[in-house]
Image 1 (cartoon, helix red, strand yellow):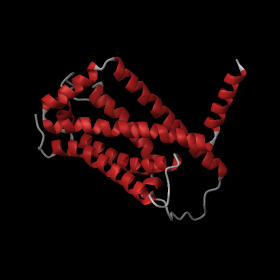
Image 2 (cartoon, helix red, strand yellow; image 1 turned 60 degrees about the vertical axis):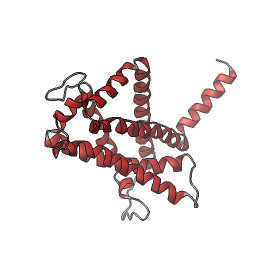
Image 3 (cartoon, helix red, strand yellow; image 1 turned 45 degrees about the vertical axis):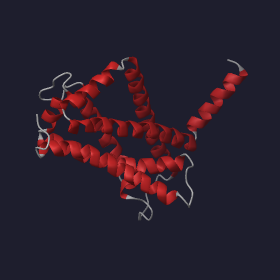
Image 4 (cartoon, one colour; image 1 turned 45 degrees about the horizontal axis):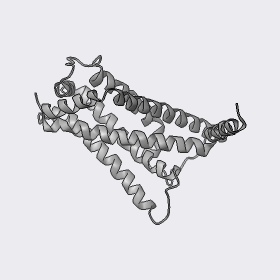
Length: 227
């Protein structure tokens, strides 16, 4: 291997092993995943436009073929790196202070920040269930390939399933609020003049995602949307 290549590899390794490097990787992958969550929600909200619109949207995604797989693999890599960085940063934090505080007072911490460590795994479990429920159909009581509208309505008719979706998406909203805010900080986008604005943007983003995703199972449970 050439000296230039070795130097580049060493710099990459040093970046990955550093705390700031891990935070930047987590921020970038978080940005990718946050963008996907928003796009996914907007697409799914076509449920309110009727079966033709939603099923046509799903068919369009499937028609992308190779591009769809590139997107899936990018998302999968982002999820893996995001989780890995979160675990490694948590371990580094514990190693830096192995003894817990006698009295822990959350002065500037938010509820979202304090619940980040367990909301992340719960959201991860929800994503796996969501894929088995609406994408592959193994967790669906009456899966109809190609009929996304019917699958969503039938799936959300179960109160326990809808409640799980709503709770998971509320946790996702909290996770995104703290995650987006942390992303701004990790990427160095912070300044006393516009930090409050960025914080409100992160909060608004979490609220929009939460409301949009909760609206769908709620609309089915209340009979607003039916087959």
